[in-house]
Image 1 (spheres, rainbow, N blue to C red):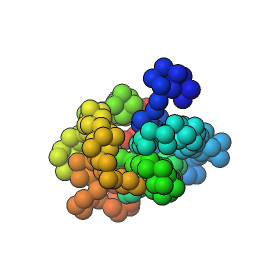
Image 2 (image 1 turned 30 degrees about the vertical axis):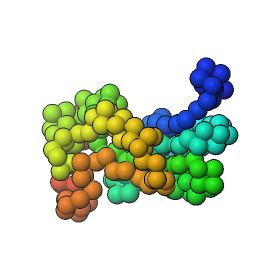
Image 3 (image 1 turned 45 degrees about the horizontal axis):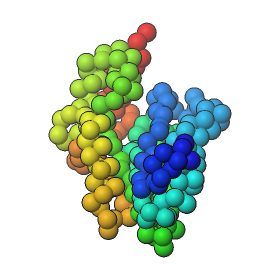
Amino acid sequence: MINKTVERYGKIDCVINNAGQHPEYRTIDDYTAEEFRKLFEVNVLGYFLVSKYALPHLRKTEGNIINNSSMTAHTAAGWSSMYCATKGAVSAMTRALAIDEAKYNVRVNSFSGGNIDTPLSNQFINSTANPEETGQIFSNISLLGRRCTAAECGMTCLYLASDATFSTGIDIHVSGGAELNYACKNVKTKGFWPNSFLKKQ
């Protein structure tokens, strides 16, 4: 992929690591080591490999890397320990790589989305017992009362790729303020995981 890009365009100015997978909501008891390994390969190892082989070209252009992380890297989420671990790794790798690549004037940043309106998230919503309620819950997590759009994530990447020329090692929250304010934290209450999150029987 890297070689074909250079062959076609002559150089690489920016890499956006955007591949990712979110498994079913389950506790650690219900995951196998193999499932975690496969998730890690997609969510972390893929970013590592693309960055590794793109960097020789990015150093020539003083380009930049943008990693798609997640708000769960910062706030965590129930029934998602494996996913949170992979996104935490992405955020940590972003900061460490920013240090290493600064001597080449290569910037490395990330963005962390909250609930984003994507085909994957819609597929999950539609798989629940009450899709309408689940969709509203996802929207209500944000202070702005809606989910983020893919276009808004794209505009964030555009900013990091072009105008944010003195920013490296940062993470931009594209969350609508989901990490702010108080929310139901008591895992013993019924409100912690609404019934709508249960799959259709």
